[in-house]
Figure (cartoon, rainbow, N blue to C red):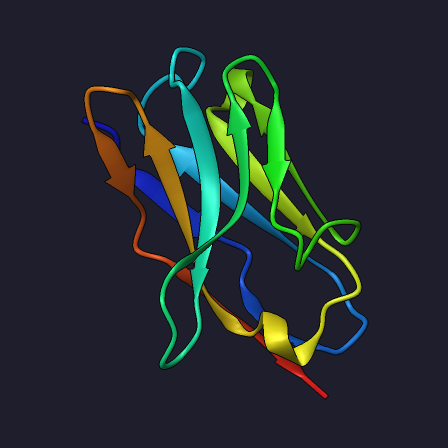
Length: 115
């Protein structure tokens, strides 16, 4: 099992930046992929960014060029750096870990971008 705890969400003005952190309860070095998803009110949860154990990243087209995902295996933490935020980025952001044998989710952190 893996417990995931997100932090770093909050209220920010359009054009601002936030960095989300996802702390895992165990070593993430062997976890196949870790990612960030988001869910806005009335919408389905969608992929934002994923990073594999080999460091390969996938970024959603809607945030490409503005968001960056990274991982620090020594700290068991995955980050989502969000720049040039837009009101449409407002959502609950969830951390995800895919071990192959199981998929785990954090509780989510709210990001609100005001216009």
